[in-house]
Length: 436
Image 1 (spheres, rainbow, N blue to C red):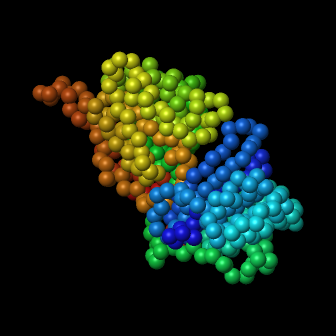
Image 2: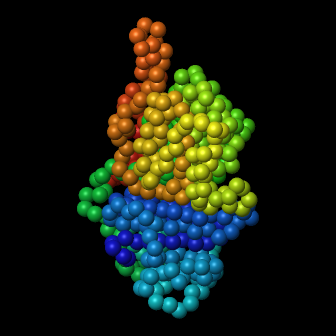
């Protein structure tokens, strides 16, 4: 491991299932154990499946990039070995499915896991990914009780499969202990006191959605589109808890039109889309500028207009965002620089929209949207809320800054994060926590 950090990549075919789950659950186990994580992934756009890659960088201190050379490759099939073995640093680690692949000789340590055979022993072929997680937890000496807690939280919605998932975890853990090494050959050690700190483990889209609620957004309309759909799904669950409304529109133009109608009625409103949807919204963005209606439009950018590329990362919508509207239609364009920045910058976006009564385009991207990272607990008081100017016939200036009774002026009474936190005793806490 370089610089006390681990760069881990997991590869396999999406048709086999569970590739991203393997990396994401392991990263969350490390996070719950007090380590810092930073993830990225690529997934195929084809319905029939294709190669999937998930990468996590894990360290005792904060990490700000996905890493270069691989400290460890977890390969579920021969294709993953062939694609990535050359990226493993000298002395690195290759964990591979010995039933579906054989690595070439090179300067790395190999651990063979007969995943197909192990899954058959417990009659749970779909459990190969959880078996792998159990093996990784043992190899790196992470606390098994924390791992079980994360599995229960991440996969516990299917009660009928939870017992099998826990058995699969134990199968992988025991296999390493009995056939590879009884003691962990590698250690990921949190910095002292890290387990006592309150940290969040969440994606960019989650941070953005939480920030929108903190900003006083009480209306969201959207149309499903990769990779922005997570925002709509999150707000569908959370907005009603704070008295808000989420509407799934028939298309992107209707979504923005609904948001503008809500804004005209005095409600902070937002929509979220990707490049093709933003192209459809440009005329209404011009309308919002003309009628001086505050609204926030999130564009989670992706590659290509549509065919075969919507799951790939790109940042090609900047020109359309800045120059795409008709003639002189004033609007503001912002872009976050980290998962944490999604929370604070979306609050700032709402403030700018309300203060200047203009549309604000918020440019995220596919990588930022799905990246999972550990961040400090959010402090919404860092960015006080700015209400819009309202007509006051009793004022000499006629227009005054006034808030609405339904919108907090500075500090939301309750923000439901909807994202797991890291706790000293993770079992004793719920995955869904709120902060006052």
